[in-house]
Length: 279
Image 1 (cartoon, one colour):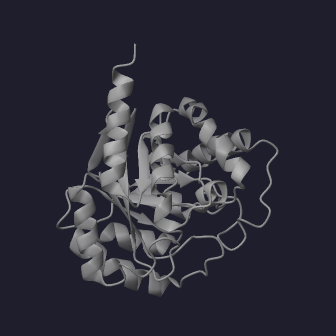
Image 2 (cartoon, rainbow, N blue to C red; image 1 turned 90 degrees about the horizontal axis):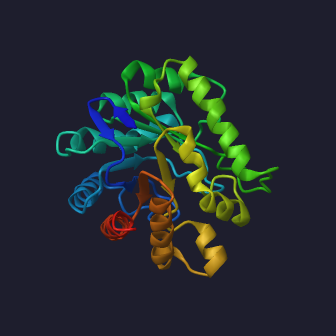
């Protein structure tokens, strides 16, 4: 299975890719405000790459529950100076975490190679046509509602079947817009319009999504469902995040998105070595 993102190619099966999170925002739920200064953001990105991050995911708009939308101009002001400097220093691909096609286009022009799109539920095909035109990798994520509404009583008939149906539909729509399958990664969207029981059901069924034939990305790092289940806060959720990452590796997930790169790399490599020696 091949994943292509402009000049980058990843052939699976291979060691799981760890994606390091770089939030250039004042209000992200875990690290908001820490990397608003471009120098701090660049130092953190380079540190994550040195710790083993295979992708750096840059975002200028918080998408936590109830987050206020950010104007396009402000999102660009936050991310472009960092992207322009990072692209000349990193040897790993950069993804742009955005819902806005104009921001994605500017980020790709500044050196990004992947679009991480939480709003793959969109009906407009502008983002898909942009990815097709630029040969960018595209992370297609499931979300019910918007960041402002997604946690207001989300409801499913069968969350696993519903997300699977969404992926099949969006893969077809993306193909109609010109994307090749090799450009696409699937993300079930933990924390994006899911109750605790929905999240646990999706995690338990991750191997079911492997039959769609595309790499899977899981982003659970420090998310609120861990606090609801275990009563932990912020960085206290690191151990539970690692447990989910190790489970994901066993379930066939190829990418893990995380705040804690060094620990996650160690955890997934250990899991891979155990699996390799299973008899």
